[in-house]
Image (cartoon, rainbow over all chains, first blue to last red; front, side, top):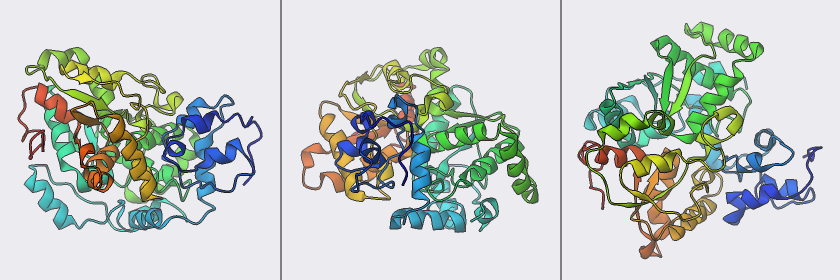
Length: 124
Length: 272
């Protein structure tokens, strides 16, 4: 990917990144070092701390999302996305199961979205 | 007000909805669930397509059709994408395109719906809430601020984006002590689980290790609760001394309001 023009490679984003703290290398690794190869745009927890800290105001979140759309997705993400496309939600739960659970908790019934609704909302 | 549960709370965490309803009922607020809502888009759909914004538009359109001005959320991601979605709809091009896609569904959308996470809703009613506290709690609580409720600060427009204080104030209102452990603003790691489970668990382990002084962990997002309660057994399998109770904000507040453990969905009690 292309390194963003205004980035000073100051590394502030790396110091506030919880993924870096846990031992992973998210997109902030690339921002601090354009030659870095051991990072993944998918290793980001979407906490926005880097973006809030960036002295140049770079939209790091958008940069990361854009990069993700060009890279192979991890199976967990792919499965969740496929589920959203099919049933509207990240997990597929049958209406009867949801009705049963909500009745057990004394919650008002909740109707699931019609199948394939999301396919009509997004153009792939 | 409308209530948008999001995938996780709708499908896996009925106790969060139950406790939220119970607390807001005490304040005279009745919640009506957004029927047929879809995933908010965060971060799953947004990772694949810029069209995630039309999912937000659809959900906001449902709220408008219900006749509500405000939609209450309880997760960080949902709060964030619905708020950013409403902001995106201010652009006439996005708004027009959203309405073109919604028309066949018999829906239309503006940018007028207010998205309110439970923290913000309660923080804006602090005095009223204080008046209803009948059972002050003596607990030591380790809080985690849900990242996406506060950031990006210029869009979310609530509290200090890097050092928020609203959640701490709400906890202190119940009489409980919010212990300082240095990781209050540190992401729980839950959203990493889809990409790299080991890394998510490592982030969770950092949190459990740092909060040893606390009686319990306190969350205001389904993702934090998912990682640090439901997945806790994966984190502590070899370190049983790190085991900790984890509860949700409305469960803690509900107890201070005099509600029973069952009323707030703590079926196994606070100490299980």
